Amino acid sequence: MIEGKILNFLRKNKDIYISGEMLSEKCGISRVAVWKHIRRLKKMGYVIDAISHKGYRLLRASDKMLPYEIQNNLRTEIFGKEIFFYDSVASTNDTAYALAENGAKEGAVVIAEHQSKGKGRFNRIWISPKQTGIYFSCVLRPKMPLKEVPKITILVAVAVAESISKTTGLNIKIKWPNDVMINDHKVSGILTELKAEQDEVDFVILGLGINVNTPKNVLPSHATSISCENGKPVDRVALMRMILEKIEQYYKEVFKRGHFNDIIKKWKQYSYPMGSKVRINLHHKKIIEGSFHSLSSDGTLLVKLTDGNIKEISAGDVEIVKQKND
Ligand code: BTN
Image (tube, rainbow, N blue to C red; front, side, top):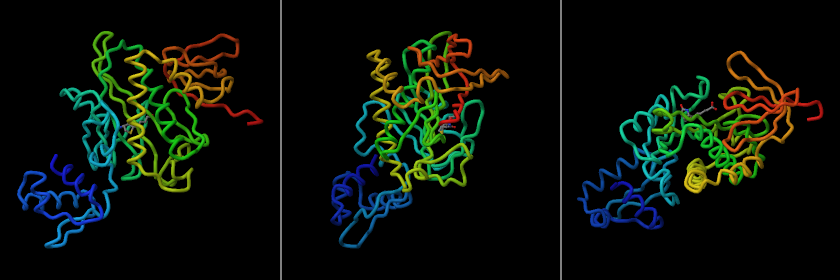
């Protein structure tokens, strides 16, 4: 992409003005074409100073989650090599699903600054206010049987928890299967959808929503944002990059090297403690109670029921029941 080339060049020479002539030579286009691309970059939110007879200078990068920003120094081989950016979509999961049906490659990312119909598990709404959060979906084409798909949610939750913890130093918890929490309030959720034939996965759409700089008053009472807990705004692009890098690392560990046990170990460092009292809504009017026992080798939840039996749960909503001394 020519705009990417122009940007990289301006980025590397941030302290000086680069002439239109130089840019036209470097990119193999006319000076008028350079000017048109600069105008497009400005429209995307880049602040570029232009002085006649001197040239162009990048004063400030765009604060949108643009592919040029995310891909700048992104150390991945699969995830985010192709990024589709939108100011607004209904749901990035739906857009990514349509792209996957049309052959989008593994690792292709759809990212939006706003979603008008952001969705969560069990048909819930994912509130996605403009330019405050991270809302993206990624196309995965793992060669694995259906029963292994829950492993994706587990490894992504670990990648997100670690990235937020590293960025902020805050105490992060994971609530099975897909909630990342700060101070018992939800800050991020994962929604995986898939297309499969018989037992074979065709593709998985991994959707991730994070309340990054979202003001508290637009969020539901059980939710929070990183900046609300941290007291200062967070660089969304840097966080996104870190998450993509970690997802790629753990995805390869699990599905190329078969090391899911290592992910479970990490997961346990962030999970609510073993023995925590839990109430689980299984969504067919059935609620069970017990204590958190462990995670199985496939990523399902093992709960110790009040009669002492262990029950394996593959889908449901977990509520951590607070004890008097908590
Ligand atoms: C949940 O916690 O129930 C899952 C929330 C997932 C939200 C993300 S935002 C990006 C992607 N697009 C969607 O419509 N949903 C996911």
